[in-house]
Each structure stands twice: as structure tokens, then as C-alpha cells.
Image (spheres, rainbow, N blue to C red):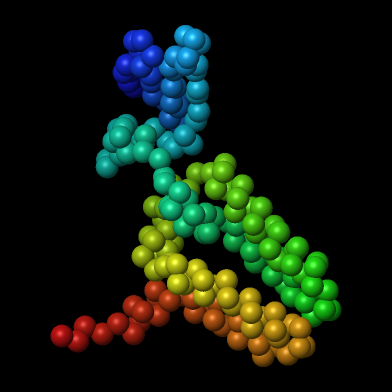
Length: 192
């Protein structure tokens, strides 16, 4: 499964090959200024599915754009675990009126995990092709993402004022935001 192109007088030479585990690797070779030979090899983390129905070589070589990475990293188990894990601890510090630890714990780890996942993107193809991936592609709009973030406001207010009702309100809004597509489907009417 070798593909080569270019290779003469500064034009890049590239090759794609599958390793013994069936993962696609791409080699890019080109000449920089002063005729230095530069070679870059990276593993795409994408299974090389040359014989699989619906999977062509061009599909495999195509990378996910930033918008897709930003969308699908939200449902990666590590990101979900981080977001869910820091919320109770952060709310505890808000309850104790300790703002700095609450902010550091509430926003630090999720931000670090998101930035790391966007820079060193894990294999998000499986998530993209899953039912959950198709769901968020359709229903996770920027407005819903903002709504999810803003659920922290009633939760923080509830923690600060020692009122569980606002924490519950924030959690209910969060669940409704995540389930907005399911709610739409349940109440969908085909009038007209």
C-alpha cells in the first residue's frame, strides 16, 4: 500500500504504509533550503482499512479539522471524567467561600485536558462514528455548549449561599442541555 509522489528538486515525496498492527503511517520527505533532507514520520492512529467496505485510502489520509476535534473531544472519556470529577470538589470550595481554590480546581484541569487533547489529539474517529458522536454533531450547537458552561452560575450561587436548590437547578439545566436532541425528538410533531 505504498503511494509516492513528487520527489524531484524540492518537491515533497510522501508515502503511506500500514504497519503490522494495521495502523496507517505517513512519511513526508522534502528538501528544505540549502538542500537539507527532511523526513517526518507520524502515525495517524487510524486503522488502515484498505479492504473494508466504505473505507478508501483517501478517507484514511484525511485529517479531522479543528472544529471537529473541538466537538468530539468533549465526549472523550478522559474529558468527561475530568469535567465531572472536578465539579463537586470545586463546588465544595465555593461552599466554603474559598474562591481561588474553587477556580483553580474548577477550570484548571478541564482547560489543561482540553488543550492537551486538541494539541495531541487522541483517536477521535471511533467517537465520531459512534451513535453519541453522530448525536453531538447534530445537536451540540455553540448555544448548547454555552448553556452547559453557564450551568455553573446557578450551581456556584447555590454553593455560595448554601442552597442546594440552585445546585440542583444547574444540574437539571445541564442534563437538559446534554439531552436537548432527545427532547426535541420526543416532542417532534410532523404537522404540515
